[in-house]
Length: 188
Image (cartoon, rainbow, N blue to C red; front, side, top):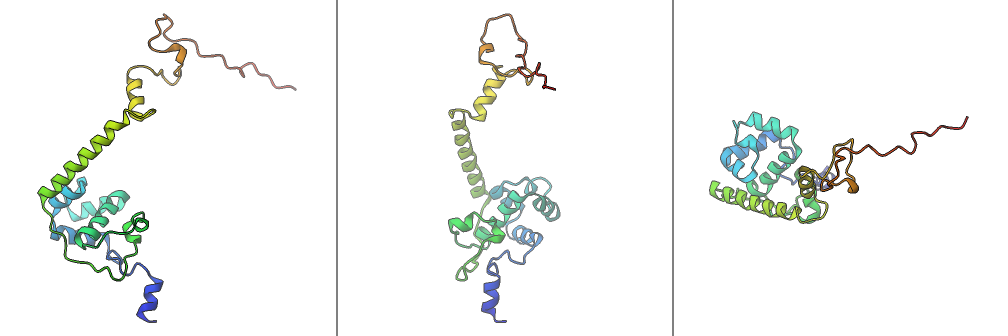
């Protein structure tokens, strides 16, 4: 079997993650960057609180989103591959097909200061996104505000527009509505 035919059978052969275990990926990243830079750029607590290769590998094996975040960092920062197409971007990093002409380069030079700036930028973007949720009709933030203000009753006494909190009636807990099927008797 020629080398070209094996490439056609296995399109992932050019992916730097192909055949590399998670522990090996972590060892390479930690030896080059260290846990501080990994935490600064990825914001995953296993790199901050009592970091170790074994503990991080155990957490990342259980947590898909964190593992994919580390693998993306490995591909595009450590292996310094160019960005991918929108179709490939939707795939997990290990399933991405890297074109044959894309070769891994030198690892990117990263600093803790740049990582902290990146975290601050992400926090600001998240805060701006969260500030808009209160303005949208039906958002969870608006619901939680109405709920904490007492506009919704307990599960037994569901919200009823006629019995709003602003209602001045003395009837605090009205009787539940009658069940129209309560007196239903099947024909014999």
